[in-house]
Image 1 (tube, one colour):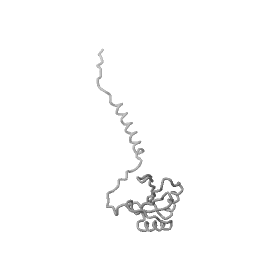
Image 2: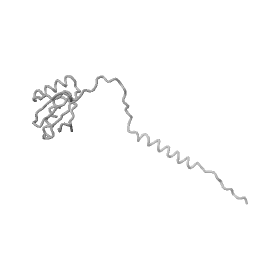
Image 3: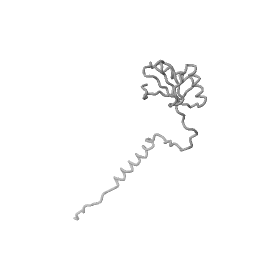
Image 4: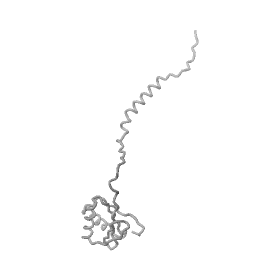
Length: 136
């Protein structure tokens, strides 16, 4: 009887089967992982620089003041003058941003009332100032 020699080769057929199964699994799950396309912004010419926010100040005495820029002086206004100021600013630039800077001692409802009057005037971009160096 002849002795059998040991075979020192690796049988790779089962490994190929496993790899094919994994490939099928990855091919099926890959489209499910993608959430959508990536919108890459394009570089184009800017038509105009963004406008600086006009500032609406509400003092501790609930009086309104307006500033055309952050560096300009505050102009105290009545409610009627305030509505006129908003209308003029929006006529010049429909996307004009506004910033409401209210005294920290004011009741919350006062600030909400100012925001509501700004919204009724047609302002779409309004923000609240949260802190400043002047103690507001």
